[in-house]
Length: 220
Image (tube, rainbow, N blue to C red; front, side, top):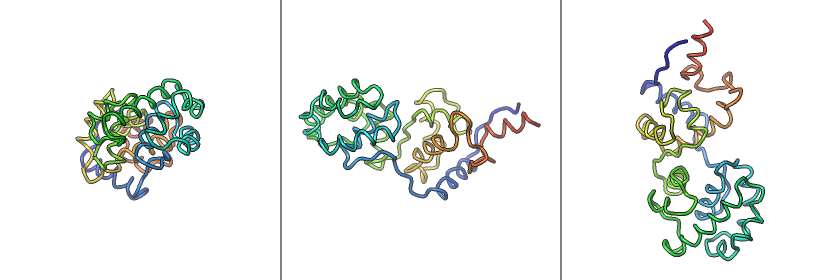
C-alpha cells in the first residue's frame, strides 16, 4: 500500500474550489429563528442528527424563543419538547442553565468570543466555534465527528483529536475559503464520504483524495 501523504497547498486549494463550485453558499441544516435559538439548536445537536433536532425545536421555539421564555418554561417543560433527542435530560438541564447565565451575565444576548461561549453550560469548543462562524462570521473550524473522520482520509490532517485536526485545517485551508469550509466538510462527510460505504464514485475530489489514492495503489 502506498505511503500516506498530505495534500499539497495547490491540491487543498483545488479541493475547496470544487466544493465552492458545487455549493457556493452552504448553510447550517439546523433551523432556528434567531441567534439564541441557533445556540440552543447546536447544543441539542450533540450526538444527534440535525433532522431530529429540527423536528423537536420547531414546536419548542414557538413556545420559547428567548432566554427569558426558556427559563420560564423550566427544565421539566423543556424536557417534554426534546424527549425524542438523545441525552435529552442532560441537554434540558444545560439549556435551562445557559439561558439563566445569558440573562445574568450577557444581558440575554449570545456572546461573541470563544471564552464567553465556553463559559455557558453545555457549550464546548466545537459548539462555540459553530456559533462564532455562523452567527459572527469568524473564520473558525468546528471539528465534529464527520470532520474528524474525513480529514485524514482526504489528506488534510494527520490529527487524532478534534483540537489537532482543527489546528491542521486552520493552517492548511486558504483563508478565502474559511467562511464556509466547515460546512463543506461536514456536508461531504454526511452525504458523500460516509463512514460506511463511502460514495467514492460520486466524490468531486476523488482524484485528489489520499484514501482513494492508497486504495488504488493497493489494488494495482
